[in-house]
Amino acid sequence: MHRTWILALVLASALAPAAMAHEGHTHKALGVVSSVQGSQVEVKTTDGKTIKVTLDAKTAITRGKTTLTPAALKVGERVSIDYVQAKSVNTAKSVKLGETPAAAPK
Image (cartoon, rainbow, N blue to C red):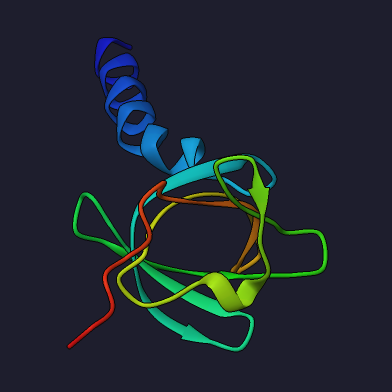
């Protein structure tokens, strides 16, 4: 009986991170835009991971209090993205660009 409880505890702790990232909840990513292709945006996060999000008609893109279009997203731009994961697609709810625009590449 004691072993069963220990096994259950170990299994529950191993599955906890997966449960936290399940579908339907808003997730946040901070990082730098590494690629923009149409409605697909890749962001290299501050922890070194790369995530891909899809922009849709409901995605709010802002810099401070200014509302922007998807054309404002450029490689190298600092962003904070709130997104929802559904199946294997991450859909951006909001994209907040850094206050200082990215420097133009030379």
